[in-house]
Length: 133
Image (cartoon, rainbow, N blue to C red):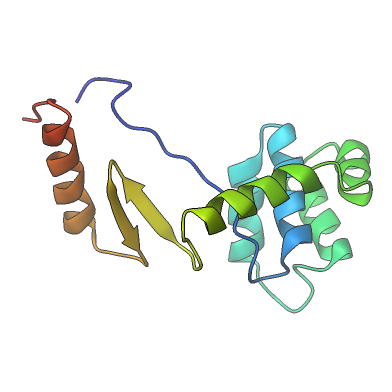
C-alpha cells in the first residue's frame, strides 16, 4: 500500500473515565506533541486518582511535559471548545460509544479482531480503486 491511502484520526468522545477534563488534558498534551504518550500512560496506570485534576497533572509531569504550560492549558480550559466540537461532531454522526473505527464508508463499533479490520480495509481500498497485493 502506498503512503497516503490510510490515516488514523482520534476524536474525543468524553463520556467515560473523567469526561471533558480528561479529554481536555489529552489535548493539552497533544499541544506539546505527546498525545499518545499521555493517553497510554493514563490508561496503563488507571486508578482512583488517575482522572482527577491532580492525577492528570501528575501524569503530565511523569511523561516529561512542560508542566507549567500543561497546567495553564488545563486550568484555563484552553481545549474546551475543541473537545466540545469533537463531541458534537461525533454525536451528529450517531456515535454514542467508544471505540468506533471508521474505515472508508464502513463503521465498526466496538473492538474487532485484526482480520476483520484488514478485510474491511482491503474492501474499502478496492471500492476506491486501489489494488492491494
